[in-house]
Amino acid sequence: MKSIRHLISLAGALLAATTPLSAESPPIALVVHGGSGVLSADRMTPELRVAYYESLDEALLAGHTVLTRGGSSVDAIVAAITILEDSPLFNAGRGAAFTRTGTNELDASIMRGQDLEAGGVSAVKYVKNPILAARVVMEDTPHVLVTADGALELAIREELELRPPSYFWTERRWNSLQERIKRNIEYGGRLTSALDPATGRLDSEYYGTVGAVALDQAGNIAAGTSTGGRTMKMPGRVGDSPIIGAATYANNATAGISTTGLGEVHMVICSAHTVSALMEMKGLDVQAALDEVICKRLVDAGGGGGAIAIDGNGDVAMSYSDDGMYRGFVQNDGARHIFIYDEQEVAPE
Ligand code: ASP
Image 1 (tube, rainbow, N blue to C red):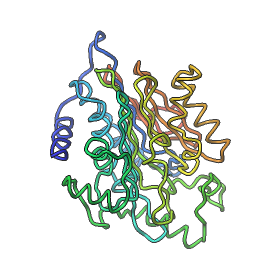
Image 2 (image 1 turned 180 degrees about the horizontal axis):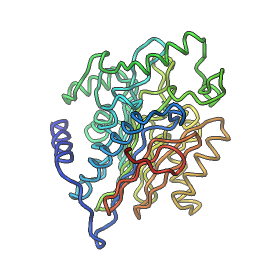
Image 3 (image 1 turned 90 degrees about the vertical axis):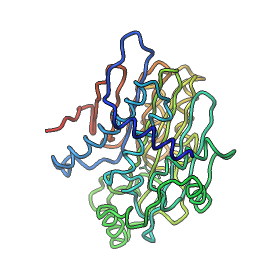
């Protein structure tokens, strides 16, 4: 039943045109990311740039349409994240990274800020949209995290769409795995492990993730994150993305947060919850709290990556310590702003 409702809300989002809300309307906002560890500027072709732009734009449009029609922040982030999961460009759903044995194991989580309800799935195979499975865990089970075969069983029970391994195979992620195996580059938990030993530069194929945070007209915040994890991970490895407090957190009293980057480090510093705690206990605004966690604590702990957030006023924050982060946001006026590198707005050629 739940899956049918999700599909209806997604279809509605995609069919409707987005419209700005009037100045008297309550604040709404949606911010999305498609992962840090972006392609270095010299490897970014005009075609790829447009493809990234279009996917992020489609995700923003779908989520914003839900919000302008009075839909919930949970529906809005699910609309946005499923679009990014369906794109082979991003390391989530269809474009997932490979484990060292050549399989795809997916992690996702979701949380809503009005009641701190949350759900996640980890190391799940075959599920086309892991964020929908995370939502099922949140809404239809007493659990917060369901893993591997149990998550797959839940997805089957809820009639979520499944796909064979070939659906998740992309040449780019496969080549990244083969390259690492051939050159004997070990998986490691810290940023140095994501650097190409030959160049010392971040290997952008090595990680990535998608996420979204929204504030709806009722004042409710929701956040979600979905990933294929990191190339070369051990089968069964679980990263930060399905962990509430590490990659995903939402509290109406503070903010919603979704992270990307070195999962092992986000986990030990509890990145997403720390952003919320800094706002609650130290009175930091959302951008300052995000910068403190992403540009300082994450880096000091040997990590790298980025995050997005929205507070209860609809203020949007984005922060990253890598070369860039695929990202974009939209607020009441309906204007969709998309970025890849440092503060330079991306527009189609
Ligand atoms: N955080 C993800 C993980 O470690 C990867 C990423 O966001 O790039 O699984």
